Length: 206
Ligand SMILES: [Zn+2]
Image 1 (spheres, protein in one colour):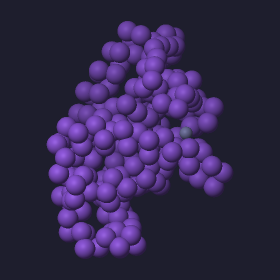
Image 2: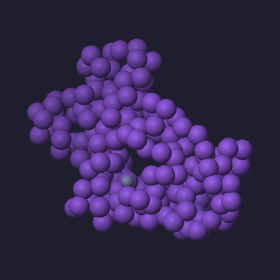
Image 3: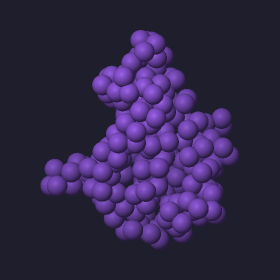
């Protein structure tokens, strides 16, 4: 536990320093205080969510993938699921990386749309509960919200043969993308601004 807390503290300091600098240089809301509304709540989420997710999500995700693999009749490749398999895994790593990022973006967009439906909104509303946001607000998520998004983004990729370790590495790119789209930055990513997402404008409207 101490090791996780230490890693999370170092990560918070380093990412906070980099993102804080960018937010100071190009602020969308220059008058927003560093200790904005909800700052301490989001700090609590920064530490609590990984402590819940790190032991639970991989296990739950692995179980879901196992059930899905058997349902799809690909239980024979179950052992290969952890290292990738088939023609997909035989492609060059750079091509797999590009494919994973594009597919993950597509899946992540639709999982977010799903979270906005009436029956999942009570879980997702936690994420949209910030009155003021900056990069740190990206981590304000219900653990089930986290699990649903990860399952939808990861499970299909594992089932078609991508190596989970490569998928996890690409997931880091998306974590940083999440920080950027929530940041208090006055700029536009153009085509990278998926689904009409605007930086600070996407919250708390829901
Ligand atoms: Zn949302």
